[in-house]
Image 1 (cartoon, one colour):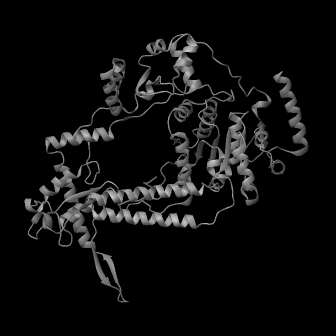
Image 2 (tube, one colour; image 1 turned 120 degrees about the vertical axis):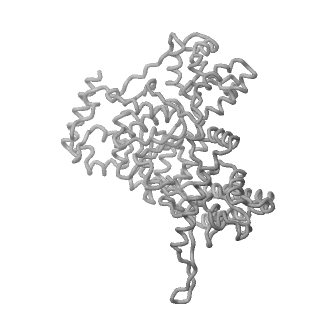
Image 3 (cartoon, rainbow, N blue to C red; image 1 turned 45 degrees about the vertical axis):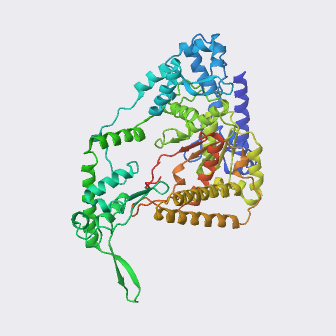
Length: 588
């Protein structure tokens, strides 16, 4: 039967191309531009680098759609687990019980050490939830161990959890393996206060006046009354200070990760005052700054009790995460071209997208990110994890992406955008097609994606949320008699956001195009994601290459859309792909 149909397809294709030329030709693309199935026809031809026919697609000679086989019975709990992960993307004990004719308790007992019962969460029916060992024994394993200990005190059923998590704990780092930088925010201000008092030999009666303060909202350090100590204090004014900058001012700059600078004020030819850098005094002050850093490095681990407290805090904060290893060998890839075999790293990357949260595919160019994203989108829809995926790709690659997608999944229903679709006369109609169509994937160019707006209400809401958060922070600081410098900085930031909000509200309404939220997209794949860098960054650092406080509009637009995706998917709806995840910018 299939051979007869393939012969008919060959006959029809040869007759058409003899009369009208290649399906991928410019003339045919103009004729079929309004037909969303055109790119399925284009996939019938494999072109060379010059746009000429290299060969016909595999569909002409091979079976490219594998018949899906449903598993209705397995013999062991291990086999049932593999089927459950493949078909449900989770440990589904009722489903596994149906496959094996065993009770849920029997399956859980058989899989001890392979799956783990979570101490707190239950499902919608109030039954306990189970997860696989690779999921449970990863993430913040120190926090999980504390939870497991608490649960085991109530019920011995959680003792295996404790035993497994104890073996999964990262090795504690020793003090000699930890480099503590002066200004690290995880070091409590009481330790900085103690260091300052000892280093500068501050008299007891002046210690209440010279206080180290730290703002949780701006992450900035401040020292009060920096000039309170007398000029006769040798450590402050000579050992660790200069005539132009005493040691306490240099310490404050160091805490805020700033190189100390000394400026002179001079008059220019027009009689106007301006500040110029004093190279000699700046060099001298920076030498003192390095001396303070060296003194702190020697001081921080000297006291045994302080060393023990800080080492414990460091391990708790920064040495608690165990990365999860994803295994995609069990994924069935229903509907995929059987002539194409994905490599191990591709299958594992797809498993990461299916079972993990938001994902960055940072493989090198040529590693197969396109197939990873296409496979993840189709499996996500089959498993019910999403309904409509949108692929945001470079403008010149939309047609190539469509061809690759259909080569991997010949029966996929996709919609590909063109420049004409986003002309003003067509934009509303095309966005409506995206919103009302049941597509497996919508492939759209970067510039077209940016022209689909986020609703005004959402833009205003996000800005208002930031303003409200800052207002709350200012109020709390004032109630607790917080540092004046922190209050002023927060008020400046709030004023900037209020200006942006007023500007947004004053904008003219655009044509009533369908907004991004109305498209029905619940999985977003972004190719060449490094194009969306340069988000606004509030920083206290200066003169550091790669730190930009300007923002790109397209990056802000992408941020708003990703925030929306996070809201509706719980942080599981965004996949970025790029071969250059860090591109000449520390902030990226």
